[in-house]
Image 1 (cartoon, protein in one colour):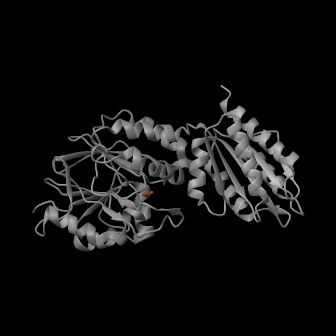
Image 2: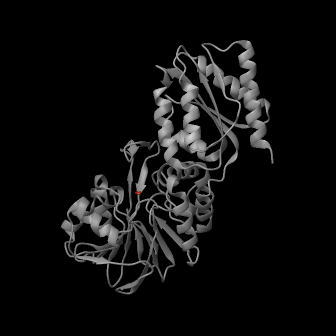
Image 3: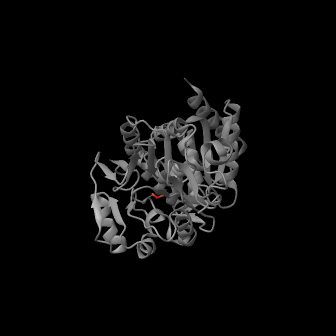
Length: 401
Ligand code: FEO
């Protein structure tokens, strides 16, 4: 049959992934303005092998693509499961209904999850780290990548094509709109930012494990990278390896994000003054973000990329402004290590903001500026001046070499 929806990649390996433009929040919390792709692959040969599945909500389109390649007379012999998160496994029951004899190939940790998530216990072939398996005329080697970003995560290398099926690693948000290969798209203009945000939101807190995995995979001769999200890398796989390595190292740029929480505008005015100071201090990459309007996804992404972070909050009933409090709980899970931090607070009638910002800074052992301003009510001209100087101080700290 003709390949109308599926896409041949190389030597009888086909792309059979799907796009999801309906889901608004990935994992129920990360916005998907450009949607997301669930990539899956069919390796055709003496044995027909699927590598990674798709999310259940796109199964119908998925099955059509499989049919296009193997028709109704052939069957799927094996399904390699590199990662069990439901965006890549929740179609499994539907697929096993169509191909009940398909054997699942995965690792010990995923075996337990198959039972827990889908009550699947049988017809599983368990593989170990570094193990090579001959499936028909194909040879696959499996490499465990624990905690990138789930404990059962692994990648699969196909010897003849030098293809790495890398699961979430090297992936990003964004549907594949026609072009699926790196040489068919404007990656920097369209996907780079969504890859950055994906990495920081999903993998960021496991960046040391990601670095370890990247080092381990460095020994492989890779010509093709087939991740489960985002484009397939056949022209320049080194590019995405470099991008991921830089992200995993949290390489920051000279810039600063000012994140503020304000009820009636006084703290916002303070944030504006701080931003003026950052600019007067010579900084060009400056973002001012309202915490009540900006999803955490983007705030975390800014912190990961910019060397400087300034947090400003109003006080609320003797405490930190609740959205800031909630956000800093998530920040504390991220283990960011390459930032300079600055804090200021509005006392309102009770205080509480600066006191609690300090507490977060101490608990996270962050590198925080000694200047920490607390302002009662609206800032006076004198206080605005101090806030501008505070911004200048942060700019100097960021730009000092
Ligand atoms: Fe794309 Fe961790 O699932």
